[in-house]
Amino acid sequence: MSSTSAAPSTGAVAPLPAVPFRQLAPWLLFVGLLALVALFFVSADQGAVSLPAGTAIHEWVHDGRHLLGYPCH
Image 1 (spheres, rainbow, N blue to C red):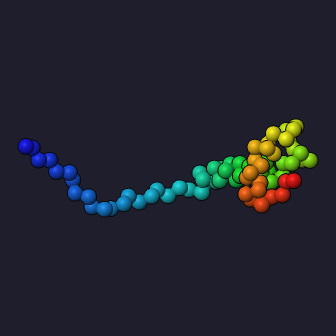
Image 2 (cartoon, helix red, strand yellow; image 1 turned 90 degrees about the vertical axis):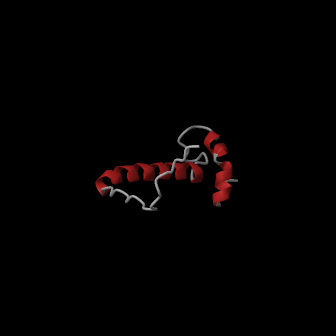
Image 3 (cartoon, rainbow, N blue to C red; image 1 turned 180 degrees about the horizontal axis):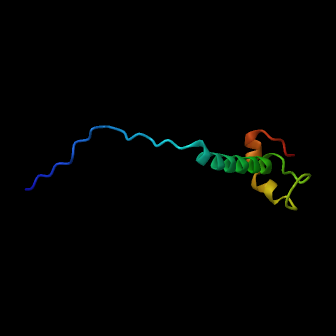
């Protein structure tokens, strides 16, 4: 019977690399804009200021509106 042993674990954690703000800023802006668009569709899209015609988006986010406390009836 052959015995193999694994290398002992030291428990050391590799340091995280520093990310410059100039590289992170465009992604933060993109995610922020996506969040604002999502907030618009969940909170304000009731037909009066609807971008697409009809009530399809309202119906898709209906339960989310109630969960967040927005009135829609």
